[in-house]
Image (cartoon, rainbow, N blue to C red; front, side, top):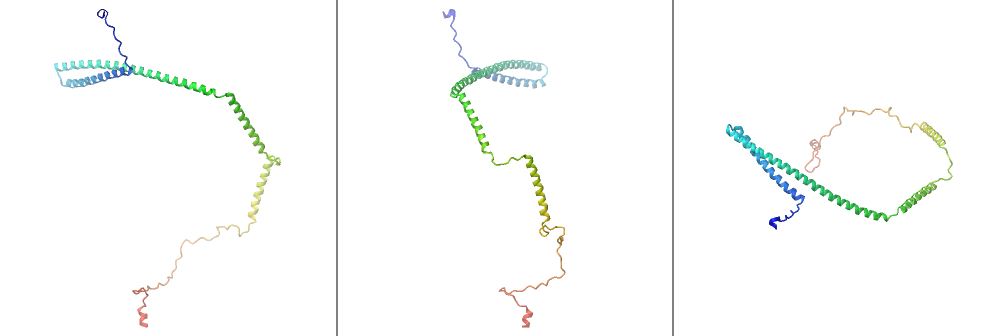
Length: 234
């Protein structure tokens, strides 16, 4: 039966995106190495063409053209592999984003259930009543402070009367200062500095000089020695 209908093919093992991307990147690295080797050959052919002539130059030029064709083919294959690798990376990123979104949604659902449970423990009407009571108590405290701050027995005085009295008081104070300055005795008033003589700027030099006594001689014990003329007189 297997000879007639053939054998059923077994399914290929599933491969992950990371494994597929790693295989493609390995092939891209191999193509880059081949392209680099062909670049070195083209440089060598270019140097040889500078000095070659005749049939030799034609042969070298033909080999260089074949090498350039191979390079173009490898570059095309590398670009295709790079595009496949980019698509795999994009797909992997999309899958990871979906998984992260699922985790975020699950966490938000759990948080919503918890928030709903905790909110049921609170009564909005009780909170409003509590706030109203606090506001009433603060208003009562303000009224109490205003009542306690009242003054008793103080006559009602207009602001214009107070301003006029303050102006008169300032005039009286200015007049008192003038009278005090005029009644002060002359010996208590500060003296003017313009009538004082100027201080001497130089030290006077005297022509007379004081006599200078001669130095007194001392003996080996530190006692003064009498002059010789006084010893002869004695």
